[in-house]
Picture 1 (cartoon, rainbow, N blue to C red):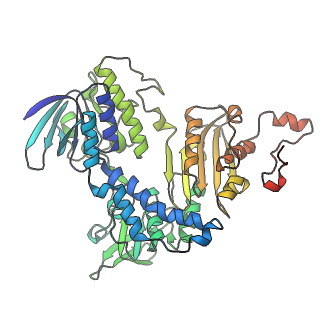
Picture 2 (picture 1 turned 90 degrees about the horizontal axis):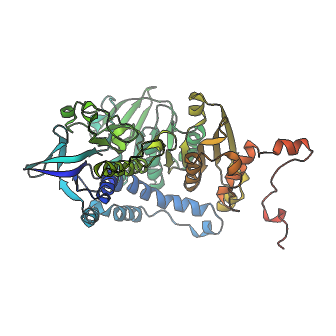
Picture 3 (picture 1 turned 90 degrees about the vertical axis):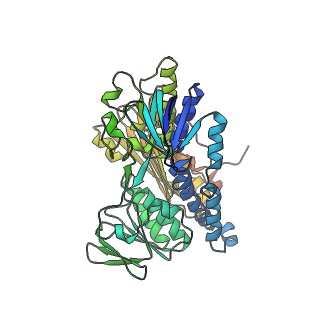
Length: 503
């Protein structure tokens, strides 16, 4: 059976859903192809369950940091209740609600494995073995995501290792868990299971969170150890064995042995492009898809009449759900504009480009403590050849942080392009700092000059006052002239006993 439609989207995760929605909003007929659950990895096995699993223990720790609440928070975490809440948020791994949404906006679902069969053609193999061929009048969009990489460690593949799916869908937490890896998935899952009371051992080839500022990884090392986890840095796992009794034995490069009941591998991702028919359009199966800023795949078959797009993890620009959805909105709108012969906005920061992928990607790691970052690290900015200014502030100087939690520890950094006078990177580390990231994202995307940021007044007493401290560390415009005139600029202490009485 063969039929035509306007747009075919292979992959119905949040990214595929968004590109389909925008193309449908332009009046196009859209078919989405999905062989698993509509809603994809993020909804059922990644972002949603992992953050749900993290939240309960984090809330309990937060309560215990505040006198008064601490005295009331005397019980232990109810792990069964946490898992039930996780099941609710993943809809018990049932996609009925997501399918209903597709129906409500007029997007057709074709269940089965989809693969390219030449330009604009997609063959779908349904579960019953029947096949249907779809032909796109305007576009095919690949949003198939990525899979975890199992590294070639001797014996690992035979030891039935967990990847992220097994960790986030766990029914009964193990007594002991070894985590191989040092990135976001590794530290978040280590935080989850340490919060459950599992004995956790983290085994990282280098430090933790290597893509962030070094102080972020250092803080998470301390945080995990504070939760009772053991953290092994700069180590190699050279062999893994699953013993007859079910125990996992991991041998490190220095000969040390680590024993666990399960081993979680979180060492990177690879694209889901095998079996996708890429060879039929001149592309190599199993590879990341190279796209331009309009998410158009760079391929000879695309040169004259653009039709093939890749959004989300599969293009390797930013393996984050929110960034994939951003790409999807741009690509879906572009497909709609091309199909209806409307003007295209392909310049940087235009409606049909994913410019932010290069310089303003926010990432939150919900570890202990939270780490929020956007833009460039200081080192990455220097490597790019920029003249850089860096401001570091301890959250201890921020009254809102001290009110938020006794003994609040954390650090914030701004990275500034000294020539332009704009923020190009920001990092916040500490309890509950994740909501600070978006202000930094706006400052970076908007290229807001530092002298204008001084007029963005943070409310007292909130943690956002860290922005004032960061700007003070960089120096207020005109401060040098004031100092030369004999006055010292500064901000008065914020404790109640230092403030003037109200009028």
